[in-house]
Image (cartoon, rainbow, N blue to C red; front, side, top):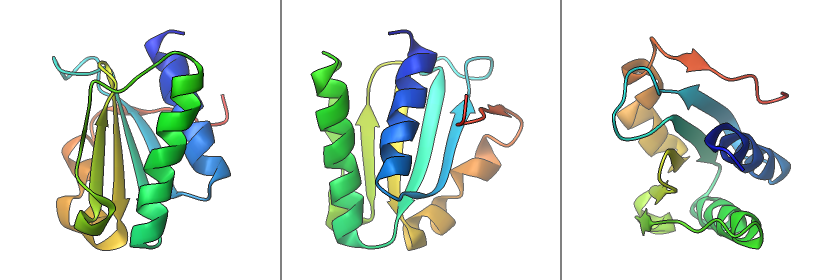
Length: 114
């Protein structure tokens, strides 16, 4: 699976589990640390944790494992490092606070329906 396929599969998993405000941003032209950033919002601490678990499980079945996972559901932000694909799962409050969409606003947003 290439990086774009990993990003889109991750988005599909998050969408199926009712993540809100889901975005896949292609940062490959502007970033040296990743090709894709995935942003998703959970409606509660519990959902933030469950969304992260679903991603780990789904990608693990494909033999794809996170290099690192930072944060806890109670912190309102879980960051999952899959190398060139970075998954950010936020609470609504943290998503609004950090506003990563604005930082990466000059990058292409993928159509998740691809």
